[in-house]
Amino acid sequence: MNLRLYCLLGPGLIGASMALAQQPLVLVQSIEMPEVPAGPYADHMALDLKRQRLFTTPQANKAVDVLDLESGKVLHTIPGFGNPHAIFYREDRNRLFVTDGGIGALRIFDATSYRELKSIKLDLNADGIGYDAETGYLYVSNGGDEAGKGYSLISIIDTVREEKIGDIRVEAPGLEAMVVDHASGRLYINLPETSSIAVIDLSKRAVIATWPLTKGKKNMSFAHDAEHHRLYVGCRDTDVRGSIVVIDTETGKELERLSIGGWVDSLFYDPAKGRIYASTGVGEVYTYEHEANGSYKMLDQADSAVMAKTALFSAELDRLFVAVPHLGGTTAKVLVFKPE
Image (tube, rainbow, N blue to C red; front, side, top):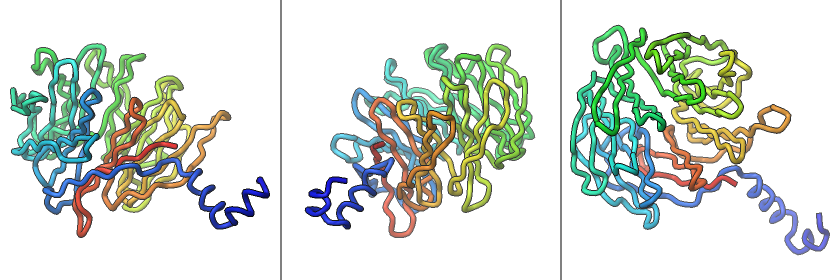
């Protein structure tokens, strides 16, 4: 270290500067949603890059909040949901697709007027989504125990015709998170009750394999590294501890277990930096870096809030958005982190 710099700044400031430089995620913005009442959950988000809008689902408000990223304000609220879960925004058609688990539907909105255009009936517990950009198909999980059925469905929605064109039956009481692998024509979906992953052939519209997990349990989230054929599986092992299980998608084999906090609900892979981001319910965002030798290095955690377990990563904006629910004295908000 430069001696003159050390003398000018002193050991305290030098140490603080070095600690700041090591932070993988830096908080750059906080957007509050003061109208959201107290409630434990906020679910998934979607982004409009062109107009700098973030679509959020504060479930306690039974609404979709539209946030303006430039002003940091709530731009609009779409009320009247039973239980909003996942959102997909299709920019070329200016359409917003929202799953409503409370009424069992995929609801479609004009993303300028925010007027509801159509509601596609599904089973109760309509929840997670996966999008195939090559076909324009949106896959929606629904059914299962919460719908009074012993099996679940992945409904296939044509986002151009805005119609349901089929269902894929999965013999499981519940489904969580999914990933579309374009290279293999497969869809991976979590089966948390049995701590396993269903592998679906999209051309056959059928389950072709089930991969059991032994290094983690209650798998709830996914991140996909297509280039290196890696699937990162977020697991809730206990209420306070969790794990990321690394899967080789060519073989279905478990490669490694990475420790994180409990109640993980969102997992993302950042290909530019070779990093994995995991948003957990214990008030921390975990970051792992995939190093050149193939190992994974845990970086410093970033503080979020209790039950801030859902997030959205935008590679285009190089930002991680973390949804914070209204709990106690904590106002509902979205925390915006910049990867460093």
